[in-house]
Length: 54
Image (tube, rainbow, N blue to C red; front, top):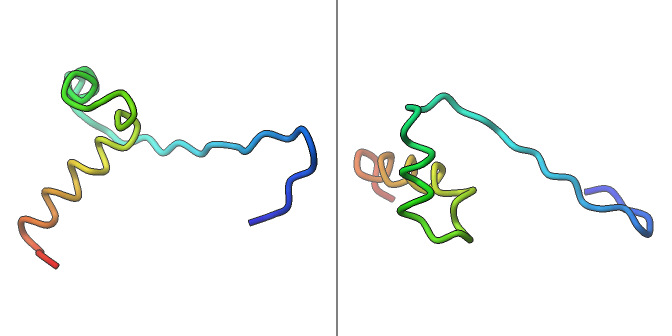
């Protein structure tokens, strides 16, 4: 990771995936506000683990 100078804010990189139109509102209603951003990742991880457990 590069070095940031004073006053520079860290940047965020958002990756968007195709999903059903209702999934974002469903995610927001089921996940705590602190996890809303990563809820889609957690959902996919749960689906993958079902077919490929650690």
